[in-house]
Length: 135
Image (cartoon, rainbow, N blue to C red; front, side, top):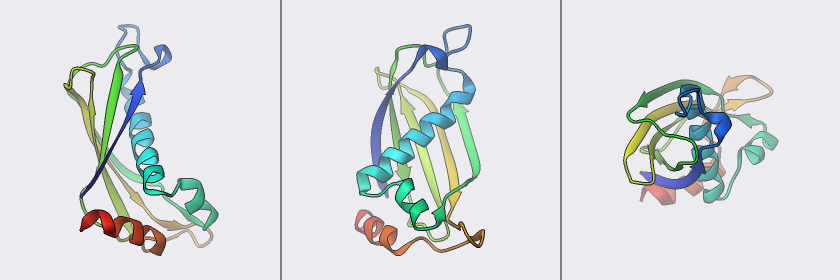
């Protein structure tokens, strides 16, 4: 299992008329979490795309536990629980500044050869990086 945390501050435009984070914003927080996790591991989506590999989301779950509000500093904990093969599952726990769980979710992404538009196994450089996290 590998876990990484990053923080996001709720912007005014991310809230609804009640001052609560709009439900459709959480997938953006998930994307921030997984993008920063990958960057922390030493690679980026851009690098993957330059190699001809894209990673579309094929499923997502989102559970709302407690409201987050404008200007809250949220911690997005992103977790990869098992070594990926042709797909990778990211789990997310989002906490407010008091440490309360406000949201949890998961996304499943698949590795696709951009040119052939077909699933492929996880790129070898990513295997090398992730294997050390699962030891």
